[in-house]
Amino acid sequence: MKLHTLLGLMTIGIAVAACNKSYDTRPSLTLKSVNPSVVQVNQPLSISLEFTDKQGDFSSIWVKKTRVNLQTTPTLRDTFPIPLSTSAPNISKGTIDVNLEYNSYLISASNPPTDGQGKPIPDTLIISLVLRDKAGNASDTVQTGKVVVLR
Image (cartoon, rainbow, N blue to C red; front, side, top):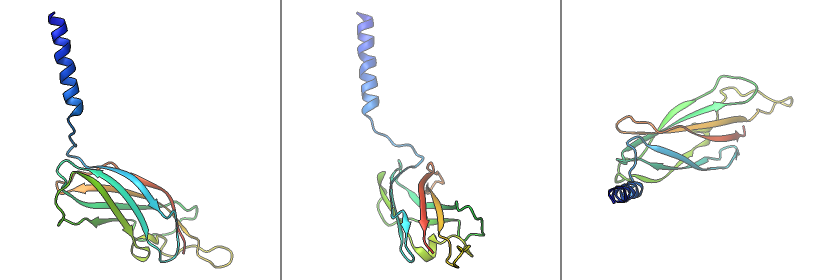
């Protein structure tokens, strides 16, 4: 009888723990979509992310562009923060849409190599994103697949 009661209490305890939703103090970030995968000249890139954060006190998204073209060349603005609005109420789960403007954030090669006809070779980028909260906690890094930025 005691074993039966003990097993019943353990089952109830596990069920309650499994149903209790709580978020870690460290933010969590998941990539939802990247649009478009081939960016035309002067077109922005939109990245949609899903987040969770126990306090909902996120402050910025850090962006790192990695140019993966075979030809190496000096690059521009490889790592930068994008501040997030602090006027919104603290929410623990939601969506963040990051819009990267072409001239401000997307072009990578400072002096892009050209093909045999003098046309600049597009930048092929992998973009990494990290969510930071006001306490300095950082989420795991999420990455886009390859994004081609025409020049």
